[in-house]
Image 1 (cartoon, helix red, strand yellow):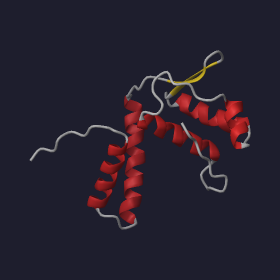
Image 2: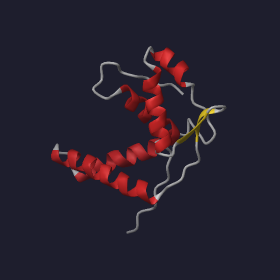
Image 3: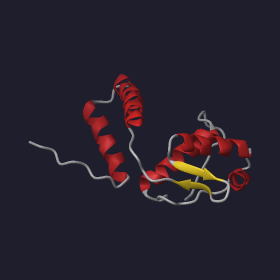
Amino acid sequence: MILNVDLASDIPIYQQLRDQIVEAIADGVLVEGSSLPATRTLAADFGINFHTVNKAYDLLRQQGLIQLNRKTGAVVTPAVADPPFGAEWTARARTLLADAVARGLSADEVLESCRSILDSFGTTQPEETP
């Protein structure tokens, strides 16, 4: 797994790390049981404070995507869809979709973009009914 951080970005570094790890899980690059680099190692690789990496890992832990253990470090957990996540995700998606519509994207453009992104993760989509 290759992670990149943009030190000049408006997006906080911990959020960039979190987002890239989530994408690696969705892409199948990181699967259940995959170990993540130690916080100090990853921080040294990027020349950032290890607390920044720790914050990203803790966020992933709170979201149920990884487990943190003193002996094994950070490990990807099994995928579990829970009702609270579904509601939270829907609220975030609504805002993101509203932003797309407000900026002039058509429904077809938004749907095509969503399909393309989902396809890139190798997810299967239900068949459309006539």
